[in-house]
Image 1 (cartoon, one colour):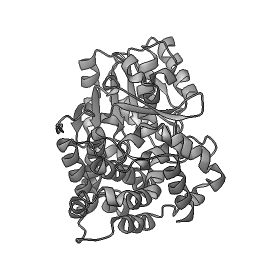
Image 2 (cartoon, rainbow, N blue to C red):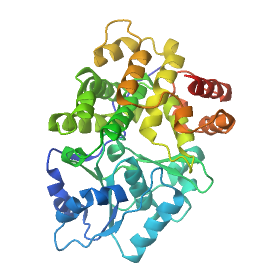
Image 3 (cartoon, rainbow, N blue to C red):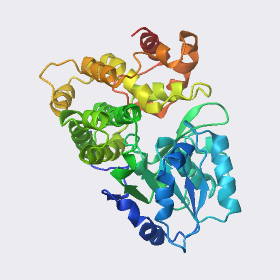
Image 4 (cartoon, rainbow, N blue to C red):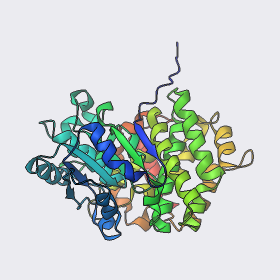
Length: 383
């Protein structure tokens, strides 16, 4: 007998609205945090976002900043930040930034309260059961894409060179401060690539075979807001639109809630490509490039999902969804294939092997094996 679930596994207390960064101290106090470590990156320091955060800290809060989070953070970056956390006797963590900073902040909050190396907590090692309470964590996203602010997972490149998921309900931030004004300085390119990340979360969650009616409904709503109502295109074309920035912040968080029911081959392949330390590829851009390909591959297994997806996206009946997404990618100036991102066909065996043990493979609607991934990667270099 099959039962449906209504649980939203990826969720946290959220504060949403223009200017809600002002609630930071109030929320730190709720968590009993007075000496937070702020995990962010140099880009946010340069554009003044980090300064905005600091200006909203009261005198009784002694914050320390770790501002060298890279794209696709590695275990060594987590160790460096954790060393500062311990040296400064911090009592909580603030993640400020896109997915990289939020994922790093989660991992820091974990290793500062646990003793084993990160790999021992990874999903592919069944490490979630080892994860207990972590340091109090507040997530403040400055992009509208990852949904990491409400999700139970952190994605880190381990010492082994693998890009793996560390996940547990304990990893969900205690509070997420969702201030769309912090995204106003995003470039059109980053708006598009992070926005397509959110779209891929909604789409893959809807297509997942896991029965979770609540999560699927959230994914459908997020997809309708981003594509059907045009919030993503509006944010891309008019970055100063506060309405579009607000709506895309909502879509990002809803995507993170929707993938309570799992993701799929798009993310497994994106994680494999994203482990390349030299190329430092953007996760959302990879998802955008791979999404049409995987949707075509899965089509016969998601026939029952396609009508609701088309309605949400504002498409006519029987419209070709992958072709529509390819058109969006062209509009946004995103790459056409993996070749254009610097990857080569010689990498396919290693990439495909990495995908097999990625947890996202489990919830792809079509059963995946090594040959399936080789086929998909070969097509990803041709398209």
